[in-house]
Length: 413
Image (tube, rainbow, N blue to C red; front, side):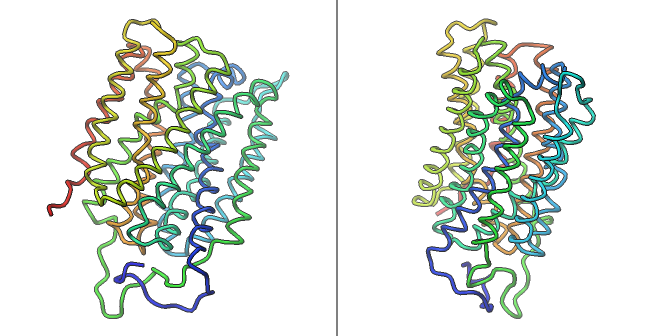
């Protein structure tokens, strides 16, 4: 642990390998919730039909989850630093599972009735409010158990849970929605959120050296909410997620409406994006841990992401797919490039804040990320209606490019 934050406390004795169980809990928890947050948008085509929604109404429904998470992330992060990661993570997972069970019972379309948009949006927002507990609490637990030379790869492995859960959702949920309806979709998601709670009860404990206090007599570092550098990194993370969210929320609609792909093609493409993102996140974490170049890597990632979206915009600029293979390859490439940096960024942010305040700092970043998850599905249909898919993807690239100055410069040798 970092010496300035570590103090000896009475604790249950764990071997060095226990940190990997803690990491496994974090991965399982994030994957379970991500299957809902990132997986439900892959059912957008069937949600649009089943709930009788237009594109703008669909954007409201999909964005409601992001709004719920955005509103709750910072309070959950502060609660994590105050009460510990274990109670927050367990309570949040179980409550999210209960909310999804309620949706399976009361918020699904049937032959006789279709739930109104306000009810659907409110239920999606509630799932987000409760599921927002997962990100900061699992991140703080991992920061507490891993040392500085391991945190990049550890946080990157945790961040693979987001595309892992999204990949599970992309592979499974469209099939469930099209063949068994949304009651099956929400029931399976409830199970995926409840199962990690059992692992957390069993394995998620404080490390032998807690990180909740500073040395006696030492001055407490400034809190994350008053630190401009932490705010800049948090804003950069949130903004760079917006092009990624455009792919995740409306990628299925783009592939269906523009690329004329069927269920299998949509599922395979969206799953490929998530699998590619998982691989690149682990590679990025290991690469930056070995080279100590997190800041330079983050700045370079904004340029690569901007270029990939420019290529995607060029591939669809004619208004019709010149080649389905080119369109699919372009959106997979852009989706992977704009997703590879996550673990590195969260490790840098948590390191700036210090382990004792990592929950709050991660909550700040995640709140901004999920404001984007609310805004992107809300605005994207209007931008699309006023222009074209080429303009949508070009604007996504401009957003990525604008993040460059927000990430800190590499330290001089």
